[in-house]
Length: 125
Image: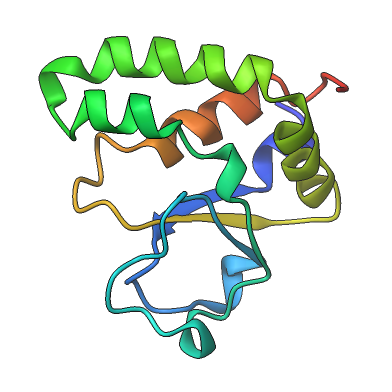
């Protein structure tokens, strides 16, 4: 596993900010409810790397759709070279934490995104 792949962390935006977070990257298309921009301590908000509106609505946080959601989201990421390249550039500079707002810590797009970035850490866009 490359250093770039080791630089990825994932956590909910509602979790406490940690010194180990590194660059804090919000990867949701919508701003999380109840979070003030001043207190989020974001480095960057990558809206365009989040699943499309259509895919997000289709998934609807249904664990029964998790496998298919992952397949479809990876296909979107494969076509989204600009945003994936932007995140890759962030990861090259050091540790980054991908932040998401979903309640489900086991079935959310940030986990798929982190896995995708680890699997494609050597790719260049």
